[in-house]
Image (cartoon, rainbow, N blue to C red; front, side):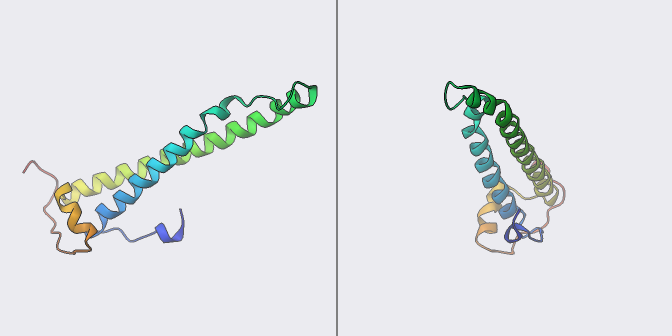
Length: 115
């Protein structure tokens, strides 16, 4: 992730950071879905060189797709850890708006319990 995405996560911004992770996960999933057609790259032409090229390029394409898939999974795991932090802070989605407004008025309410 870029340096601009690195941040100190605390009770005041955890919901904002979770939202950023949600956006990154959604974008990464869309990119991976858009690459489904690359699971079987066809030859450019009906000649021996093009057919041989598929044999060489397909494993490279597959490796790139796997790397991206692994990245998506890492983002999901990080986001899930943030969800746990939100629950531990005792925040609710209703408090999300206050978080985005830059308010530091969120109060720790202990572990998430039914309210």
